[in-house]
Amino acid sequence: MIVSLAVCFIVDRTYFFYPPALAPAWNNIYFDATGLIAGLILLTCGVFNLHVDLLVKLGLGISVAFLTVLLVAEMFHVVGAGYFRFHPAIIFEIYSVVNLMQLAFEYQPRR
Image (cartoon, rainbow, N blue to C red; front, side):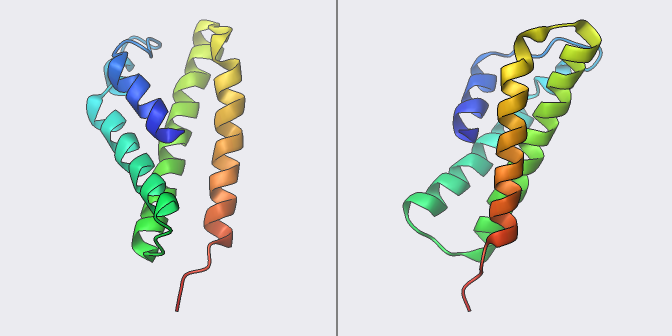
């Protein structure tokens, strides 16, 4: 999910527009690349059943931070600009953040 979000943001460089002074920061390619890398780390750990604690914790932490920043940016659009098309994305991201935080809390490192 995070990989697809990051790819969509990389493709659409004008996704965030409000406030205009922060639009370049919200649409930053480095931020999108960070989300893409975090998503790929989580995807790799899940597909190949990797239990490298550093990778799993890094992937979970950066993914939660990525989604939280997206949530803040979308709240700016809804509250500040009255752009109500972000409501489903906001609900989905809140669920994703809670779910990833629960996974991070319940993760048992191998000893």
